[in-house]
Amino acid sequence: MKGILIATAMATVYFIAVTIAFRTLDVRRRAAFMVGVWLVTLPAFVMLHQLTPADLGVLPVSLTEPLPLVDLVFGVFAYTAVFFGGILQLYNLADRGFSLRVLIDLASGGPMTVDEIVKAYSAGQGLRWMYAKRLEGLVDHDLVRRDGAHVRLTPSGRRLARVFAWLQRALQID
Amino acid sequence: MIDLGQSPTLIGVLLGAGWFLIHLATQIAMFHLVDLRQRLRAIVALLGASMVGALFTITGLAHTGWLVDATLAALTSLLTMMCLWVLYMPFYFVIAASLSVRTLIMLASSKDGTLTLEQLETCFASAAVLKDRLAMMEAYRNVAARGPVFTVTPKGRTIAAAFSGLKRIWELGAGG
Image (cartoon, rainbow over all chains, first blue to last red; front, top):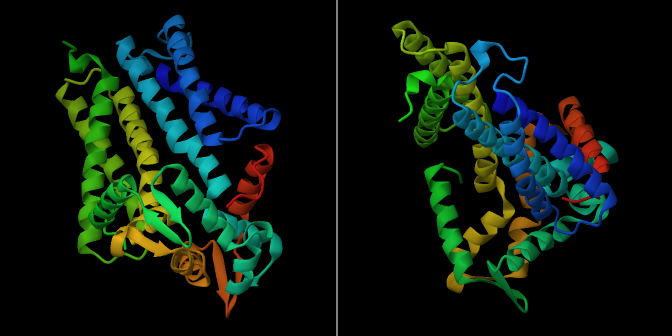
């Protein structure tokens, strides 16, 4: 359990640190920044684990793992899950979530028809703006290319599309 | 060589990972065999059942006398399953709902992998895609439809308020 408790403490410190960074620094690529900060905290995690006693001075014997390396690896795994599955996903949802943005627009703007939501999406920027952002992301990752009025798949985009299509079939997603 | 019986954490991790794989395999089989409307509820129910399965397995092992500490093994197995689940679910939602993923797949199925921007916007930036998404949000009771008008439910309002708060704390802007 020591690894879990350290993971919880580190995740809390991480959240506070990223919040301070977002509010004081001009961070452009926030997701990459968050991953970078997480990577920097990993050695601190290991050091904290190595420098503290196996029971942290408070854990009962029944919750103390006898093999320190096993506890450390499990703690790092839990911290990784909390970051990639938790904190980073919170950011993705808050900054890019389509359904969430619609929900926030409805909550702040009152009842709307579909056409009204299309225009009001993201404080009036509209659905086309949303989609342009997604296309820009695909271009940045060299998955598609803009060719005048056309959008063309790149070779890496085609490979990735095949993987996604297979995954959709495997998971029975339309 | 590690004696597994001496490491309740390792036993918990292995059991948790094993039961999570059973959960995943069952989910995939179920989606192929049954036409489910409320997939998220089914996934959560399967996870719950798998967690119960892991606890039963650990109880059985404890009765054999081989497992040194059932409490830590049980906690670790549940935590392992939860960690794997929070890593799996964003991946699932990307495959299921991401407009970027659907754009790539649509381009791949077109001639020469090319479409016009207008064709893509018709599919992914129009009232049609919004209607589909609103239908899903209605199914999960985040919005309610009254004729042609959509309104947010109390559950949806709570979610919107929580994330609006997070966007303010992190100074994220409108986004979307």
